[in-house]
Image (cartoon, rainbow, N blue to C red):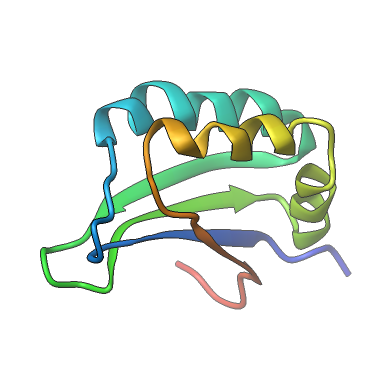
Length: 105
């Protein structure tokens, strides 16, 4: 049986003085993530900006070939660089929620 694809939801909080630089995130951070984790199975991503008043400001969805590939990437040599870049666009730490894709169309 082949491994199920995986998605990692990355949530950035809103409120309580939270800041987020979407321009930097899209132009610098997400290309960094893609370039460093592509070799570990990252196949693409999407970024959502939530409406004002939502508990989160931004969501990124990272698509991986499998959950094992995400764990390989997250445990790899580039994670410190990727997480260290967060301070350049947000003053809040993200929440990461990895999951297997159970159904999709």
